[in-house]
Amino acid sequence: EADALMLVTAGGRVTRVAADSVPLQGRRARGRRMAELEPGDRVVEVTRAEGRGGAPARDRPASDGGDQLDLLG
Image (cartoon, rainbow, N blue to C red; front, side, top):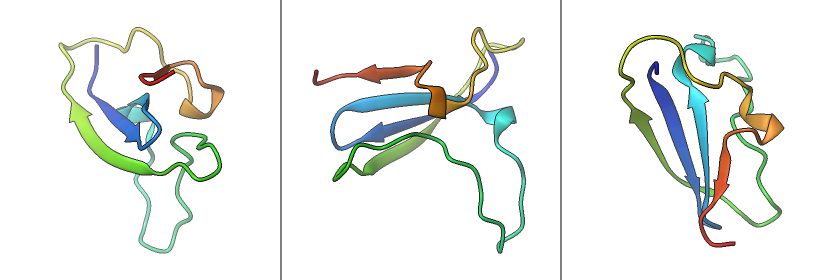
């Protein structure tokens, strides 16, 4: 797998996003949605997950919920 970003929310949801799917943008750009948050939830941690080389097993945008895991539910 390639490198990825792991986002963790206060509500216990973990989202994995392929690092190469995040576009490089200037400071004034609006960016990319990484995860759909529930009302009142917030991101508490973002970290890099190093890959082992090759392509990610699943390369979907985070907003489709394909790589989300609910740790508390």
